[in-house]
Amino acid sequence: MSRSRKVVLAALLLVAVLVLGATAAARAWQPAAQGPAGHFSAPRAVPIETGSVRATIRSGENIASILDRFGAPADAVIAAARPVHDLGRVRAGREVGFAYRRGVDHAVSFSYGIDEDRTLVVVETAAGTWEPRMEEVVYETGVITRQLQIRSSLWQAAVEAGLRFDDIVRLSEIFQWDVDFNTELHEGDVFSLVADGLFLDGALRKLGTIHAVRLKGRERNLTGIRHQGEDGKVAYFDLDGKARRRPFLRSPLAFTRVTSGFQPAGRFHPVLKRTRPHFGTDLGAPMGTQVRSVSDGVVTVAGDAGGYGLLVRVRHDGGYESGFGHLSRILVRAGQRVEQGQVVGLVGMTGLSTGPHCHYELKLNGHHIDPMKAKLPVSVPLPEGEKAAFFAERDRWVPFLEPAVAAQE
Ligand SMILES: [Zn+2]
Image (cartoon, rainbow, N blue to C red; front, side):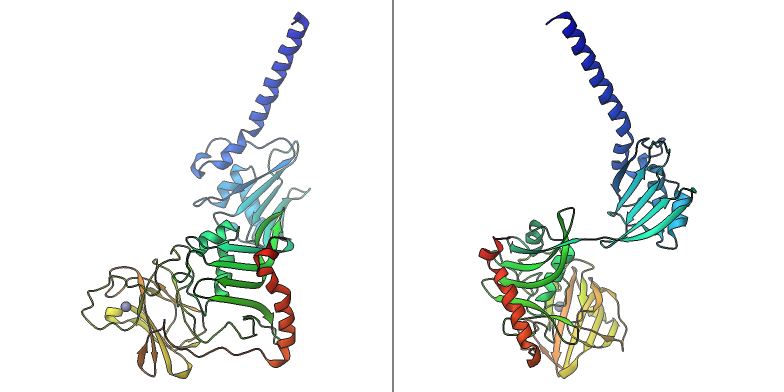
């Protein structure tokens, strides 16, 4: 290699080192955004170039420290935002964004994702004041199909399919009159769906309208097809046009991500040694799981009831009464009307109970009946006048539930 070439190479190397060094310096303030909240007493640095940065709020962080860390004037931004949104209660996990302009030594714009559909934006005006505005998140919509193969739980299968917890809850609610999703799914069951997927930057963020779902298992084969009635109400129906909704929920417990899918229904929790007769079903569940009224009714008991601990009883039409014991909290009062699915309390272990569970009773005309075997009133069919429209919807969406069609997505 000639001497001149060596010089050129050395010069190139020097330039490379300088460029890398400068890039590292320019980014030095960014890694700070990733560290724990307590680490930012060090002098903050803002980029001198035009650009933007995003970060996620961690638990325990407050808005003033976040704004300060990214070089935005905390007092001015919080005060400006107040008429639109109170930044005093930002939520961990939400995204914040900052924008910078060349030559300006502080952030000139701040954004905060309030929820999935709204973003608060506060920008500095030419006059140096800060102005807030609310922006709607605009999703792209496309029809998607998914086949959820249950291996350990619905939660596991749904996460693998890219769905969020809220989507899974919506799916489980379509069959909540037939299936207890915490205990009654089996390995090998397949959950298929066709829905509007809502996308941001090409990534599925959540489900919009769910058009049709099917649960195919060794014990059952259920289909739910969406239909909006002439009264404007949206509900799901089976292939024959019978409402999935029925007067009683299969289980009072809301779907939770904690339980696996494979406990036997109504499994017995080792409460007491059965020294007294036991009327009801013990549903094991994590502390704090929501307990829902299984049908419309009126609360008759809401309070401490000795061995049952905190107890709620609800009277329903047709001579039915339900009861939920050992709650950690009661969220209704005696005399109150409740709707099917309304949360009446939270699972606990008050009274004679050695572990968190819900003691669930169902009575008909004063006699205990087994809620897991009870022959409960059946659902109503669609009005005749809506059947043609419904069957057209059914024939449009049901083919998407077949794997062969799903593969063409
Ligand atoms: Zn019990």
